[in-house]
Image (cartoon, rainbow, N blue to C red; front, top):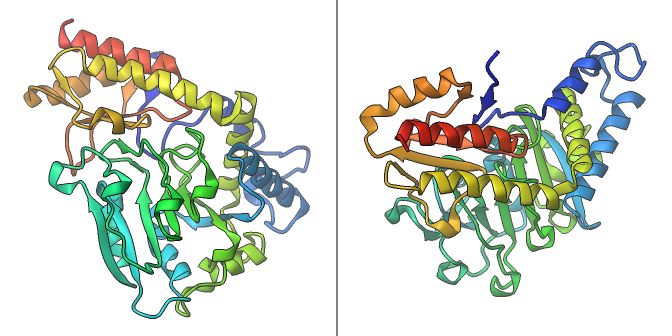
Length: 364
C-alpha cells in the first residue's frame, strides 16, 4: 500500500501513536468497561482525563498561574463572536476593538466583531496581497480600545507573525491572539497576551473543541447578552463542565499532549518544524517553477501556500500527488493554487516525499 501523507489544513493529520492508542482504548478505557464516548462528563473516569489534559497543556505552554484554561465547544470561528461578548461588558458602549488585518481569518474576525462593537483596523497588509505582517510600529491603536485582536498564523494565506507583541508599546491594551493553526508548534510567552484561543483541529485533535487561555482578571467582563454556556467566568467556575463538554475531543487532545511531552515538548517540536519548513521552502525557491508569495520573514511554518508558474498544470500536479499518496494539497478556494499544511504530526518523511515530488514534477 502507498504510504499516505495528509497535508490537510484541518481537520488535520494526527500522530499515528495517538490514533493507535485511541483505537486500542475505544471499547474499554483503562478497564472501566466504557468507551470514553460513553462516559459521564461528571464521572471520575472522565474528570481524570480532563484534569490530566489541562495539567499537561499548562506544562507544555508554561501557562502562568494567573491564567485559566477553558475547554469549549465550537471552533475558532465561533470564538470570533465569543471573544467580544466576553470582553466588552466593562466598557462604555459602543466599545472599540482594534484589529491587525493579515489575511482571511483576521478578516472574518473583523466582520464578526463589527456586530458587537466599533472596529478599527489598526494595520493591514491587504493592499499588498496579505504577504506580510505589519510591524508593531505601524499599528495605529485606539486610545482605550477594549483590546487588539491578532491572528498570529493565517491558515489560508500562509502568513505567520515573526514577533510577539511588546506590551510596553501597547499602553496597557489587552492582546487577544487567535493561534488556531500554530498553537503548540512553537514556544510562546503567554504573559504577553490577555487571551489566546484556538480551534483544536490543526495541532491538537478533532474538530469541535476550542481551547481558551485567559488571564483571570479578564473574567467577569461579559456583555449581558453573552450566552451563559460561553461566558468564560461561568465556564471557569464550573471547570469547563457547565455545559457538557466535547468529551471525546478532550480525550484525544489529552493523548496529543502526552505525545508532545514524550517527544521533547514544544521546544523540541519547534526545532522539528523549523527543519520541515526550511526543507519545503528550499524546494519551492529552487527556481521559478513554483512561487510562494509571502515575505520570507513571515512565511508560516505550518501552512505553506504555493503556486505553479503555469497554472494550467494544476490538475496534473494534484493527480500526480494523489497517485503518490500526497493528499489534500489543493489551495483554499479563496486564493487558489496549492497549500501544504505541515503541522506537528506531519513527519519529516512526509515533507521529504512532497519535496521529491515537487522536484520530479518540475523536471529537476
